[in-house]
Amino acid sequence: MLALLLTPLAHAVTDSFSYANTQDVQTQHIDLQLTLDFKQQQIRGVTTLTLHWSNLDAPLILDSRDLTITKVEGLAPQGRWQPLAFTLAAKDPVLGQKLTIATGKLNPLQVRISHASATNASGLQWLTAAQTLGKKQPFLFSQNEAIHARSWLPLQDTPAIRASYSATVTAPEGLTVLMSADRHPVSDTVTRFEMPQAIPSYLIAIAAGHLTFAAFDARSGVWAEPEQLSQAQYEFADTPKMISTVEQRYGRYRWGRYDLLILPPSFPFGGMENPKLSFITPTVIAGDRSLVSVIAHELAHSWSGNLVTNASWQDLWLNEGFTSYVENRVVEDLYGRERAQMELAIAYGELQKELPTLPKALTALHADLNGSDPDTAFSGIPYTKGQLFLVFLEQKFGRKHFDTFVKQYFAHFAFGSIDTASFEQYLQQHLLALYPNVVSQQQIHTWLYEPGLPEFSPVPKSDAFKVVDAARAAWLDGTPLAQLATQQWNAQQWLHFLKQMPSPTSKQPLTNAQLQALDKQFNFSNTGNDEIAFAWFSLALDYDDFAVKPALGQYLQRIGRLRLVLPLYEKLAKSSEKAWAAEVFAQASKAYHPLTINSIAPLFQ
Image 1: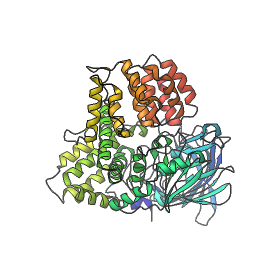
Image 2: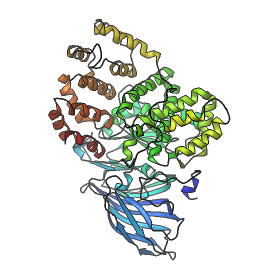
Image 3: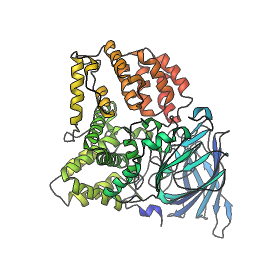
Image 4: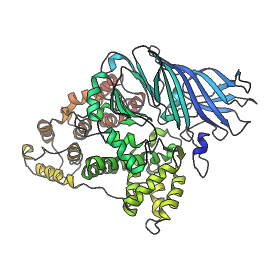
């Protein structure tokens, strides 16, 4: 059945970030024949699109970015491939290039396109062997969200369209190739993949490197470079429990396998929810399973985001708000309510600090992106404000009723792409109408369409932070650090300890001597927890305490996770150490992802 018709939308959705004429023609299946060329840092191949035509007089319009298109053919009714004329428009800095294929009266059920990616494709990162952990083989990985699939594949690059896909990938011998699909090795150099479920284009993913596998159980496991495999296997051993936990609450897992791939530290995000194979940053391997909520988050996307998808990037909260909510419920079920509340309270505090820095139009859940790059939609708004909206509904209707609603929501819109208006209509029919006079339409409207946080938003707190606040206050009043009872603190308490320190503009700011005493006592500069290190370096830079420079320089060279490096560069760029930071960036950027480079480079221009 046509993937588009599976989407139970009450109205058509127009995606302003795609050139594709999806109202005229819709992709049903994508077949990829790809060759990975590490010497040229290029993916070459043929993409074949199986199409359903709604308008027989229309051309086929696709998205592309910096692709070289060498040939386009259409499959005629008699089974022969015929050449098709095509034009590639001038490049738009956000959207890339419109690829228009003249199909005439042929209206082919299949169109195949021969293409090659550019060496600077925005959706790909190529690493030399020296830039990997094992330093034995080069590494490649993709990052398609939001609209980067078009940089290595010509397609309808919009989450409003879902299609199944298959792929045959040829790579140099010695490399393991993985995709967000079922894997079937053919030979030492050829691998076949099948994704039978219909997915949006941003969830097509590929990686290749010197990789080994360890199973958690019969349906889940982890891929990593051999040097990191045992660490990853230990750190994420609770993955099967997480899967079972979500299934018990919100319905069965519909994707077959669920594996993790630990990427090199240049991966710009905490994780990417590619179906069947979540891409994970090594920065969450802390040795104590304290940061595994990232795994819970990427797994939760198997229901919210992958199963039920935002039809446009202005409604990103439908992916990320639901996922953050489910993630926190998983953490509560497996690690206790106290830890879940700590994590929610930390996220709330981060959102409070971020809100004043964001344009008002981007602080509504239904965001007005106004033609800007959809990557700008990724802030605390879709994640934490979206999560707080759902916490608000849970508190108003009770968990029993709200869990029932969420489970039905995932089932009703399964394998569909929806927008905020469709969600609002479903919410009205299946929750508000069943329990009248609990939540008003105006309250819902305020959450979805008004900027900032509503005055009636939940304010998450954690009793576990009381001992932390008391210890911090005691130290500020003169108690020696060695006398503070911190031995039993977990990672979340340490993060709260640092994040709630007085600012330089407070009535009782810290001194550099106090900062250096903190580092001497607790060795924050050399912690194995990258989140704690980030909080510590942020605090030190707020006070222009550049005693951390040696450790900070190593930190910035070692990882490229955007959320953990961009704020530090921003602080450095405003400081007397801007020139030093520019030198660090010049060296570190050789291993950074294009998204990370493009975000940081303007600071030093």
